Amino acid sequence: MKRVWLLLCVSFPLLADAEIKHLSLHQAIEMLKKENLELKIAKFNARMKKLEAEAVEGMNYGKADLTLNALRSNDAGNVFGFKLQSREATFADFGFADFMGAIGQGAAQSGGNFGVFTQGLAQNSGNILSIAPEDLNYPGARSHFLTKLSYMLPLYTGGKLTEYGRISNMLYKMSKLDHKKVLNAKIYETKKAFYDISLVENYIYNLRKIIKNINTLERVVRSMQKEGYAQEIDLLEVQARKAEAESMYNQAKLNRELAYQFLSFLLNHDVASIKTVNTLATMPRVSRTALEANNLDIQKAKLGLQITEHAVELEKSRFLPEVGAFAEYGSADNSLWNDFTDKDFYTVGVKVSWNIFNGGQDEKKMEQAKVNYLKTRDQVELARKGIALKAKKLRTEILSTDADIRSYQKQLRFARRVYENYKTRYKEGLVSISDVLIKQSKELEVLLKLLTAKNKRNTKVFELDSILNRGGVL
Image 1 (cartoon, rainbow, N blue to C red):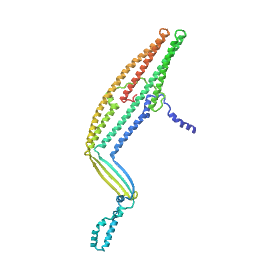
Image 2: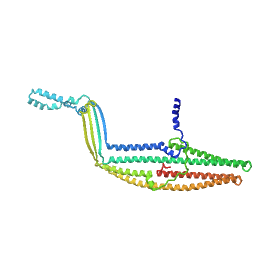
Image 3: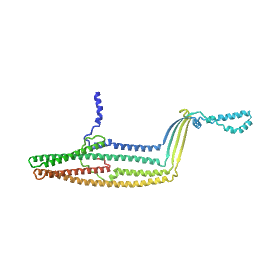
Image 4: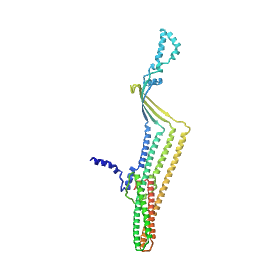
């Protein structure tokens, strides 16, 4: 049992990476949405923009900081400040011990006579005031632990935070549109890969038939050569044509393999085979309303216009004052959190700032924002008209290619009939083998033109689908 379990554990990764067979286009698109690496990166970019928008929103709720400082110093200013902040400062810390000593000495010298004491104090006041207090100037080292909670809240910013929030949310929406654009592009490539493989399969199928016909023709020539009705040069000519067809057949298989490799790259999984699709993609309906509502470039341009509009409002806010509130609560002592509430303190306040002059920079920035808004407004109109023109151009090209395809289909049917007719006439000795092979070359030429036209048409259809934001529609 343990061996079976070990075998399953070892083989599971191999089974997980097994090649996918008979993959449908619908399955491929669903797999693409989950597994494509570029789409995953685009999702991460959108996620980061969302987090940025949430971070800007958080600025409205202010900022709270909890700090803990652990200090030790024998600097006179620091030690005195530590004691004062801990509410432990005494007159001794000011050097009153030395002052009182001088006063006491004067009192002793006066013998209890207040008049003599006053006169002596007046005469020696300069000496007394010049005493350098030992306790104040040379205090002992002291530890200081300061715990403080600070909170700052913007009360009014002139609309800055509001506009920043709107712009950041719109940038998040823009990143989601970018993700959709990447998705459309990848679906376009996936569809094109499916239709390319289907066309190559059709080409390979026709080449097999042509090679089969050449083999039949080769047997006919050999038979006629035995009876003396054909020459060796006829056989060599047929064999040369067969080698050319086989070379084209091998090249087609290599192209199919390359298309499968590209499809595997898009899906981030190895694809061995697909369910072939109709060689002609369905042409979508095009209307100006659908373009206006669905085209991602137009949506991005409109969103960009809104962003520039809010950017103008943001520049206007620079001319308005900003008001913020501040609150602080804490406690300090020479040991950590000792008598916290007895030695606590608080500070509250409001700050108003208003820039009244900066050399005209704000005015120029606002004018620049207005010009950018006007430029973006014209870009939106340009996007509308440009996308509409591109859609009309693609639709016209598709209709033109449809006419070419119908023509090539008729030419191919005719070329096959002519080839069969010339093969029969060759058996009767009415035409040369060169005439037969020329007609077969014509069949192959028309086949290539037909498949090229179909590929061109499909590419244009998928471009039109992408413009209409119909990438996921099959």
